[in-house]
Length: 249
Image 1: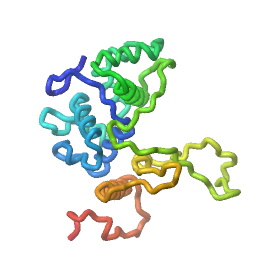
Image 2: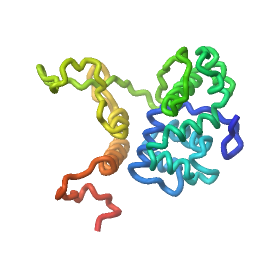
Image 3: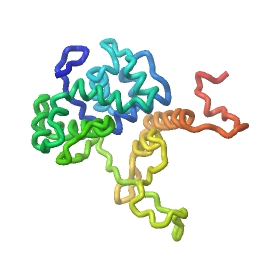
Image 4: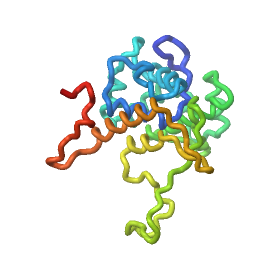
């Protein structure tokens, strides 16, 4: 079983996979610092910070001094290589889980994860993280493995609902019957991560909380993301408020 830089037995991450990849996308948008620490993850919950840093050490994304490794730089800067890198990471840390093969049952999967020394709902969350990573890595999975909901990874509970894009009455955009269409279809994954990170409304319609510090971090991440993935028409000038303060004259 793989161990991290501090020789602590590997424990599988149980944070949300979307949060894990969202952090990678955030680093892609704003750049990789010299050290990956909690201040870099300030917009995330304390639980997500701990989980990501623990996973980053175990997965060889940061070294014993929390400095980013070449593997992290490749994950962040070469998105097309992510599946291959994820596969290598899983083979290093989940060899016994992968060895279960495509004929394994859900109970066998659960029992194998308990071998990591985790119990209860942590097992479910850790399995959800692994299954998401395995699909990205194109590792064959048993059809008996259930797609479990990953949970919030320690974040303050916020009711999340599926966002549904509703066209104006009588207008389906010329696509015919589009019932069941993915509302995020055609959007960049980083934009999807941005949208999914917003607080959502409960069924009673009450306004959800969105603290000032989190708003500021969200808008900064959004601006950096837009600058990274969208191009401007020729002759379209950059607005002063779109330039980071430290780069302004």
